[in-house]
Image (cartoon, rainbow over all chains, first blue to last red):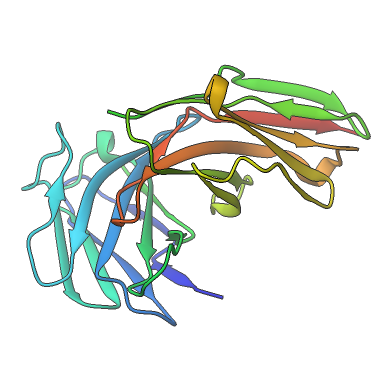
Length: 117
Length: 115
């Protein structure tokens, strides 16, 4: 089945550090990937839609200069949290939708737990 | 705009009990897809089911069953004979048509199954 790999799975770093999270579709191509954020005991909130070869579409309230998204290929999207601060600590999950005809559901990565000290 | 409501934030049952997780959605579109995902403590989202708006047939998969009622905009999920391994957070979600739109998630229901 379709697999989405997210790396790293856990990051602990100092305040002010920039952190890059990778989302890869391992056995399918994805023109569109999604980045979600989940605070403890809360639901997933969409941050942005990542489009291969073009700029990401950010949801209202999400700082595009803070959360840099790059979707350089059909199998890789990256989310960089720039100058991370403790309030950026969260669980970040990506998903990818197979680029094919038909109604393919989104496939989720295993998530990245980001802890900023 | 779409909205998904899971009124039950936490449910606690004893093993072997049946439990139903409620999901109510709002959308003005006539074509949409509804999902259920399971999120165990490890964090990954496990896809359980997808149902499109034109298919109101209920579905059963082992101990899991889903009741889709367009008249009440509900897509409820029932676990029969619950087990401890069913303990997780369950999310109901909605997406529109087939354009790769993002998922709108409900708030989630934390299910605790006690032995």
